[in-house]
Length: 234
Image (cartoon, rainbow, N blue to C red):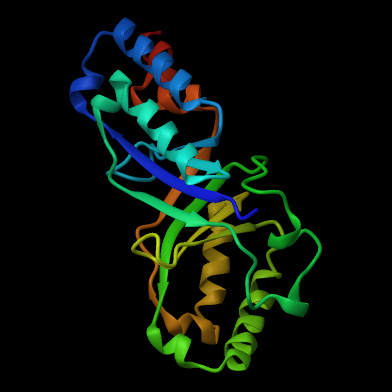
């Protein structure tokens, strides 16, 4: 089964932030209940401190698109949803890479369960599209180029990649997500990848989201400052 991935961002309005604390807490509890619907698996990431145009990133995993659609319709019934916008949203499917072949390694993308392990503090996500000239290359040439790309990634075994394929179902071709222990290690990885031949065939790889992994309840408390309010009052 090639599971489906939905990456959804929420930006909460200032009007909601100005509501009294009791109302905000009720709205957050209602939203958490909706997000934890049956039929999908959802991982939450706070974008507070890393993006100015979105507050929350939700990575939704399901076997069928209908489950994602039903989940999102349930979320749409909440008060917090009505007080929010969705600046970015992506749809992708999990499938084996056509270029891995003999370059598979223990613990690699094809060897892991679906979705994030959740044991690393940060997730980096972005949509990506390759230049059409990439697909004009013979398959053998693309495989050779990607071998060097994979070899560079293998020098950073602490960073885990999850590739989603969006051909024909969304505006980008891929959505790539990286679980990382430290964003500076990811900067080093991307800098090294810029030196590879495969980098010259990238058309677009923005916007980039850096999310802090945490329970949804905590991520919502970061949005309205509830996590820090007691310290400020004291």
